[in-house]
Image (cartoon, rainbow, N blue to C red; front, side, top):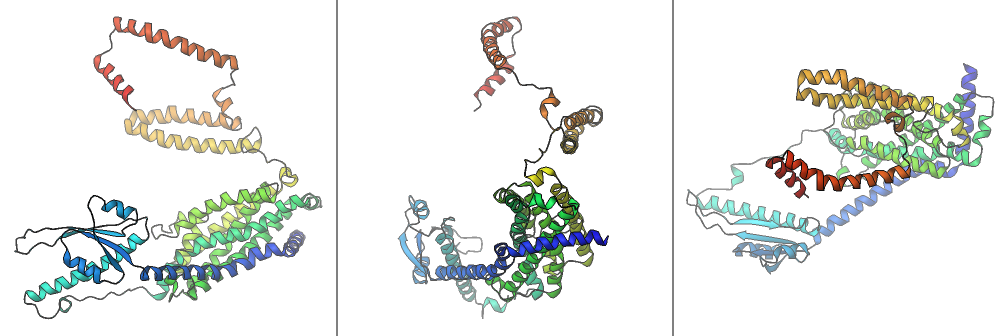
Length: 523
């Protein structure tokens, strides 16, 4: 046992020394993410504040149509609004769309009187153009103006009716958020940190994994390494340990950088004054470790399939995009961390990170998510070991096709056929049983299931090829031409001879003919 781990440790040390000699990979994986976060977030915060200041200082053009002289006076007196004159009803929408006017207010006079004898106020319709940034900003500013006008009018009517004081003396309210500072800060951080963490883990692990396998293939040192009298599994485990350890260091540094940016208020104005709990941060660091193992091993296996570093980069991008999907789930509170989600790879850690920063992750769920992530990391390690032990991977040959007449191809075809059988039986059987319960159940169990199962077995034996499954063969060009000519030769006699004869012997009902005519007229 000691000799086993001694050899693995020796190869791991060799891989680590080679990795440390590549200063570019070390800088990209470890140093660059820590330095780039404060720069990016500071730039984003400054940009947001500059845009907000420009919006506050901007002046928007407003047009009013209808009988509303008092509203025109208030708009003319308001700061940041310019009254452009009356809008012509025939061109008002066009002017707003073209950006000649930021907002158009259509005033519809309602001169009628309600049951209490009060004259109804005019109805206002505010027209704006959403794609134009200035138009929604003008809408917000005019909305604030109308709220103040409404409050003044309400107070004026209250005083005219004989009321004393203000309406606030009778109805006053205050707003209070019962959440703690840690809960508020965790809710804000939980929407962004998991997504960014998965992204940075991929960015940090990718150069390490690509250089360790695909890079060695280009340098011609991978074949030499496998010529040593050591089990291939030990070499694969050594590479896995180095990549996983580097990914863990990357994850810890990136998480620490994100926490620092939140504590310093560098992530926009929403991060100012936010507080993250120490317990939530500790749980987040625990969750990062198995996630880093899984991502590092996955990228190492993907790199083994590539014959060059450039090809490995092509393979990494789809895996990264697929990993973003569970990361996006953490941005909403609708997805709960239940027993099923806790077992899903990537999704369990991203949602658990959200709950941990929020302060609502129990110890039991923390253990369950960590154990599930370690299990998937073990699965990835086993898969990576198998990939790195194959001759085509070591020598850089084309990999074995996913489906083919080989043991591995037949095994994968059998799994695919079994999954297709389950899906077909579930959906088609449900439709049959909805149609008629007893006959549908009999058809599902005695006809549908045996046929799909037999087709799946034959599909697996054929190595995933559909031609043997359906008894298909490539037709000769002459047969294709003969079929086309035969079809054309039969169409004319059928339409000109057989169909009129059939109508003479057994006429088609008029309702059926009308139905066919309606179908022909459809686009």
